[in-house]
Length: 258
Ligand code: MG
Ligand code: MG
Image (cartoon, rainbow, N blue to C red; front, side):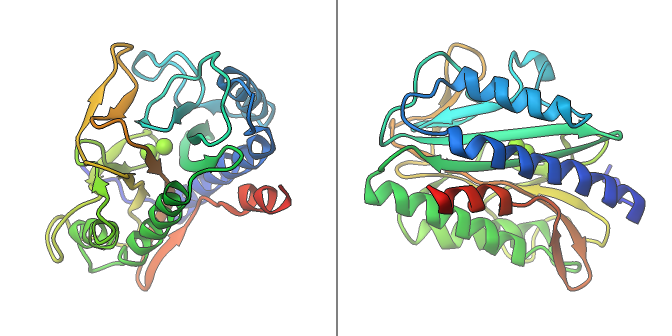
C-alpha cells in the first residue's frame, strides 16, 4: 500500500529531511582522521534531540546506535565503533530523524583526509547517479525509470550496483512502499504519481555488486572487500519532476571550507 501525502504531510517530511541535512552539516567538520565513529553518533544524537526530534534508527529492529557509519568496504548499516577513522578512508553516514510523526532519511559519503583518485571518482559518480535517478522520478514515469537511470550511468564505469538493498517510500514509517531499486528497466514497475514520497539511495561498489552481512547482524560489506559509496535524498513526486526535500547544502558548505 503506497500512502500518497497531502501538502501538509509533505511539509512535515520536509521539516524532518531538513533536520537530517543540518545534522550532516554539524557532523561534516568532525569527519577527519582520528575521530571515533561513536563520537559522531553522540554528536548527531545530541543535535537531533536538541531540535525536538528523535533518531529514527535508534532501536529500529534493535539497531543499537542513532546513525549508521559505514567505512570503506562497508556498504550500509555500519554500527558506529570505537575504531578511529584513518586518512584515506571513505565513510557513509546515514541519518534518519523522526519529528511531528514523520521521518526524514538522507545519507552522504565523506572523504577522510586524502583519498585515492579512483575512490574519489566513485563518490562523485555515485552522487551524480542519485541526481540522475531523481531526474527520472516524475509523475507518469515508473519505478524502473529511476533504477535504470542510476544503473546505466554507474555500470558504464564498471561499478557494481547493489541489488539486495533498495530505496523506499517514506513518511509516518521509515520504510514504506514502494521499494525503489537502484537497477531496473525503463517503463517497468509501479507508476509514479504526484504525492509519492520516496527515499532514493544508490549503493555503488567499486568492484563486484555482491555483498554479505557481518556477524554483528547489521553491517553489510562488499564481497570483494572493495570500497562502496552511498548517497540518499528524500523526494516528492510532482507533475514536472521530483522535488528534493532533503538537502546536501549544509554539508557541502562545510566541505568547501576544509
Ligand atoms: Mg538512509
Ligand atoms: Mg533510506
